[in-house]
Length: 65
Image 1 (cartoon, rainbow, N blue to C red):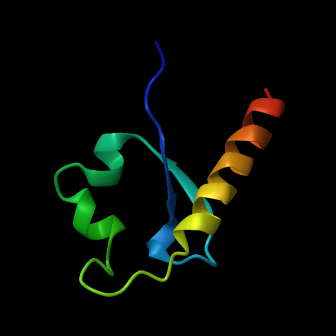
Image 2: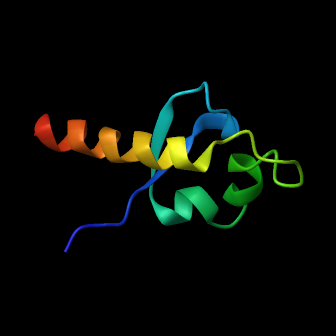
């Protein structure tokens, strides 16, 4: 079985590229604060658009294999 991989906007900025991260890289000790600098602020991420973009990202990733 493969490893779970999270897709994350660099710096929680929707204009920045996606970054593939293992769960511990995304929210592991010390990483949560680094990867979520805007944690106590309203999100700039449009979740509907983000979910659509993630789906397209994985589709392209799969097609390139």
